[in-house]
Length: 212
Image 1: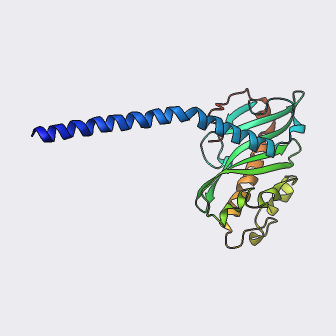
Image 2: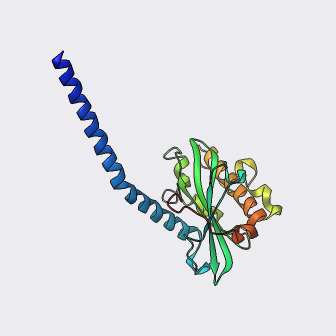
Image 3: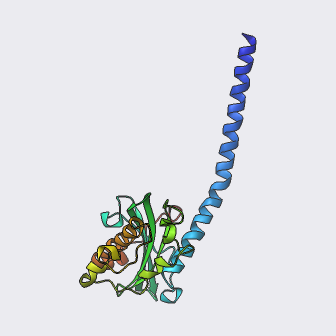
């Protein structure tokens, strides 16, 4: 009986020590993780909105929105570019909910004339060697959106070529590019309907959670 009690106490102490070490590691790395996430977001913002288009603090001129056109009912962040306080462009977080392996998180940059400045994937679980071609480091496919001016007259072109549109699909993988094209199109529809109000909204953005 004493042996069982002794072993139980030792196991309890071991569990407490292990829990404490995990907690220390978590809190010790939490700030570093946030810093890395913010650096990643800054890098993406600079890729989808050229620095020549703004002289405000793009990262901090931010608002939060919820709309089904952005892929789901969670909060998405919108970053607003201004030149001498004149609105010039937006960078929007958006979600493609129908990727091959789940959600594909994107950032879409668009200027005030509805010209796409850039699109980047920031998080996904697509298949390596197939769906991961949406990553700029793997393929230049994601740059095929650059410079396209969005309008209601060209909606039919916002599909992959297999569906009669203008965007290439991947060899052996159509679901992923189809999901991204659809998400970008829906994001632009959202901007078209809400551009003025997005620039007018007060700054409200938890930047520690941005890009998650």
